[in-house]
Length: 110
View 1 (cartoon, helix red, strand yellow):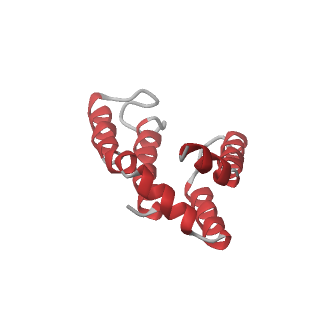
View 2 (cartoon, rainbow, N blue to C red; view 1 turned 90 degrees about the vertical axis):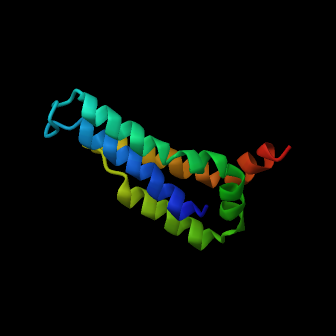
């Protein structure tokens, strides 16, 4: 599995959760049974992300800094919360974690 495909799968679940907890959803901010089932079904799509973690790790490590920066920007473009301050904090955290990926991946390989 490629990182771009994994990002799409993750955002599929995130989008389901955001839609289900928005004011415009049938249950308002509360998740209805049908919405909960929809979230669960979209969550099944995350199984390949977790089972191919080593492949994703290798894919990330094999890319140059330009491609990594493109993926980070793609993530930030797709990640949207109603609270912009929280959104910026989460984006900054993700960016910082990915900047440390060399150390993190090095520890994971031990």
